[in-house]
Image (tube, rainbow, N blue to C red; front, side, top):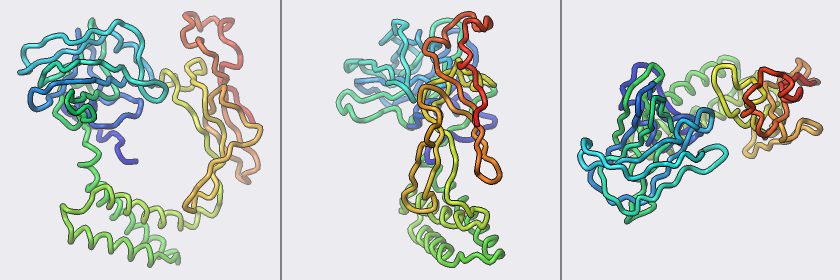
Length: 338
C-alpha cells in the first residue's frame, strides 16, 4: 500500500516527528512522544508565512482524549513562542469516524508551529496540516522538518511515500524475478510477465530520475500481481474475509474485548479476485453492521466457517464498572458462531 508508515528501529525525535506531517492519514498515530510535562511537537515551515487554517487529525484507535488540552503556538525563530490557540477541551477526532479539529489562525504569521499539551501526558496525533492564508489549498507543513520533545523506544523513522517509491519498486522487481524463476521451475508459463518486467527495468534505466516514481511503482505491482496469481496453490476463485471497524481502544489484547468494539463490517466473500474487477458479497444471514466480526476461519472443504462476533452497545465503553458483569450485556462479549 502506498504511503504506509515505515521503518522501526533506533529513531531520533526528528525521525518520529516527521510522521506528523508526511501526508499519511490513516487513523493511527503518526508520531508519539514519551511521557513528559507539557509535551510538544513542532514543524518548521522554512520561512515566516501568513497562516490560515490548521487541521489537527487525532488518532482514531484509542487514547485520543489526551489531545483535548492542546494549544497551538507560533514562533519566528523557534525560541520565542506566542499562543495562537487554546482548545476548550471538547472532543475532536479524525479517521476513520470523524473530521479533524479545524483551527482558523486568521492570517497570523509564523515560521514554526508547535502543538503542545498541558500537564504530564503523552502527545500523539495522526497528522497536522497547516494551510497558507493566501493559497488556502497549500499544506505548508507536508514534508517539512519536524521535531518533538522526546524519542521513546516506540519511535519510528518516517520516509515520505514519494521518496520511498524507487526503493520499493526495486524490491518488487527483485521479488518478481525470483517468483518468476520459481514458477518456471514448476512448469508455469511466465514469459509474458517477465518480458513486461524487463521492459519496465529498461525504461527505468533510460529515464533515470525523469521516470515517474508512482507510475513505475504501480506498473511493477501489477506485474507482480499477475505472477502471484499464477501460483498453482491459488486454485480457488473466492476468498472469505471479514470487514471490521477498528475498536475504540486498540492496545495489547483490548481489540478482543467487545465493549471497545465499533459497529460496522461483516462477513464477505470476494469473488473474481483474479480478474480486473473483484467484487465483495455479504454472506446471506451473516451478522449485520450492529456489531463487530473477528477472525473468520474456514473448514478444509470450504463448507463451514467459524467466526467471532459481538454486538456493539453505544456508551458501554464509558461504563466505569465493567468488572461487574451485570453492567455488561452478554452479547457485548465476543462469542464464536458457525
